[in-house]
Every structure is written in structure tokens, then in C-alpha cells.
Amino acid sequence: MSVLIKPIITEKMTAESEVNNRYGFLVDPRVNKIQVKEAVEATYGVTVEKVRTMNYGPSRKSRYTKTGVQHGKTNAYKKAIVDLAEGDIIDFYSNL
Image (cartoon, rainbow, N blue to C red; front, side):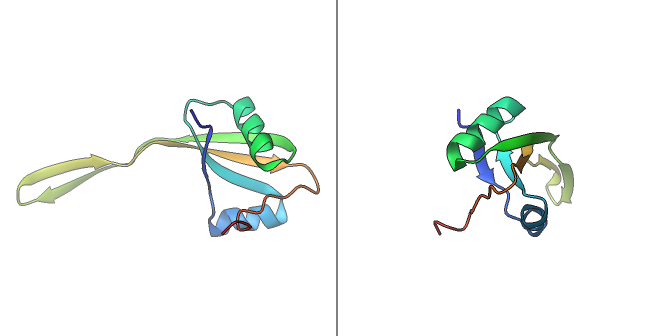
């Protein structure tokens, strides 16, 4: 099981990383904050001070079509916001 799925690279998270030294990751829904901290420290070689996690449920939608009502949903996911120690940075764009 891999703990970190992918980093969140949005305009809002990029601004947070520049101002408050916070980075966002999509993580496996079964992991806890300690496992997220260890995975980020091992992967990027930084010191993690604080981890906040959020669970997002699926969004359910219905469509009315010629063939009847179709029901669908998006996937559920878990997001982790990681605060790094002063002076540490993660450069997501270095190996593009």
C-alpha cells in the first residue's frame, strides 16, 4: 500500500506553499497522520511539524435521459495538508 498517491498542485495550494510552507497530498484513505508524516519525511527528506487530514465522500448525481434515470457518483478520497519546518521546501517541479 502506498501512502502518498499524488501531490495537490492547484493555485490555492501553491499560494499556501509559498506563504505558509504548507503542502497538500492525496493519500490512501486507510492511513493515519503518523504514517503520512513518515512517508513525506522519507520521500522528500524534510521535517514535518504538523499533519491535517480531511475525508471527502463521493458526490452523487442523477441524470434524466431518454432511457431513464442514470445515477452516478465520484470517488471518495482523503486529503492531507502537511506543515513543514522553517527552511524546508518541497520542489514538485524539479524533475519535469
